[in-house]
Length: 224
Image 1 (tube, rainbow, N blue to C red):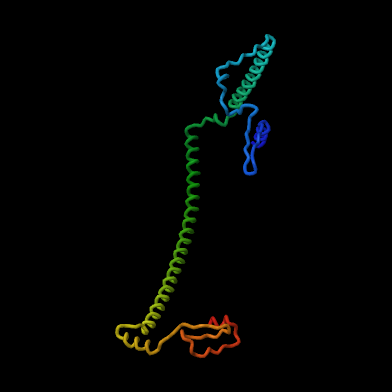
Image 2 (tube, one colour; image 1 turned 90 degrees about the vertical axis):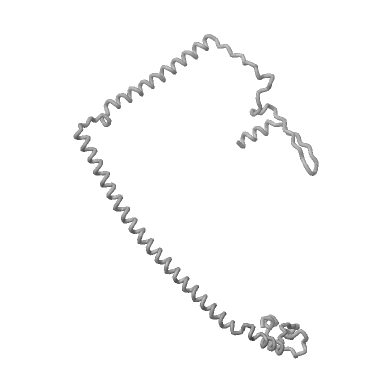
């Protein structure tokens, strides 16, 4: 394909026009491409048959007859060889008596039964092995599911106990007034500021002294 494409490009005359931004290529074929139909002027033209001389016609006829004769001889020789082989071969021409045919049929039945018995034994062994593997697999899955259920139950019990313990501090209708009084008596301000030295100033109105800091870097003070 690449060689044909190069030959076609070599037969074509190319003209290029363009500028800095684009270029156009016009291809003119020296010969008509083979995918185009026959021209209308040559559509109904009948080519003139070349005339042969008598000597040329005689020689061509002699060569043709000689080729046909030789091919016919080879075909006849092969046919005779096949017939001779069929006559001399006795593999397909053995005549058996009814008793012999019955004995041969019985032998084939016995051999087939032996094959079936061997295959059935192998199948039983294979199925028994597959059943044992299936039982082991199912037992492992059941044990794994049992362990998962136990772990899930333990996590649920721990969660329930935790929620029960946390529920002791919940604000209910009965202790709502006491919780309000406690909140008003102990205000909590979570706002704080930090200076360049890592000192923390709690409260929106920083009137307290800065918290004592150690020689740790400011990043550790932030983490505290």
